[in-house]
Length: 82
Image (cartoon, rainbow, N blue to C red; front, side, top):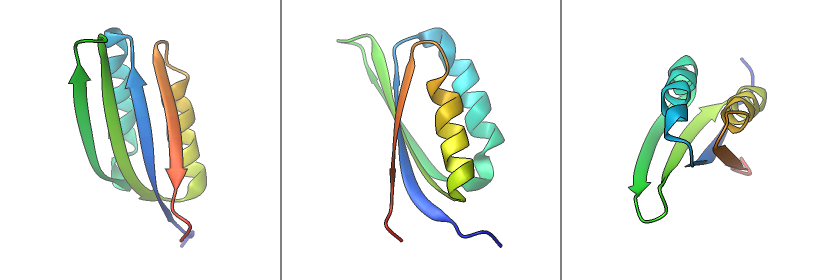
């Protein structure tokens, strides 16, 4: 079994039309998702999503990259040291 890492993927959504694609990607990687929290921020017309994951680094990186490649979506991933 491949070594897994815990990470948090932070997602800023500036394009509401990207939400369906975001949810589809998260569903594809559901086996690695520990939990998620979404917070709308109407003042700035954005949404902020945090996704806690536990999986191989290449899977986490792939998910983060695919999310960040969506129009109007920015991501940043922070990995645990263990």
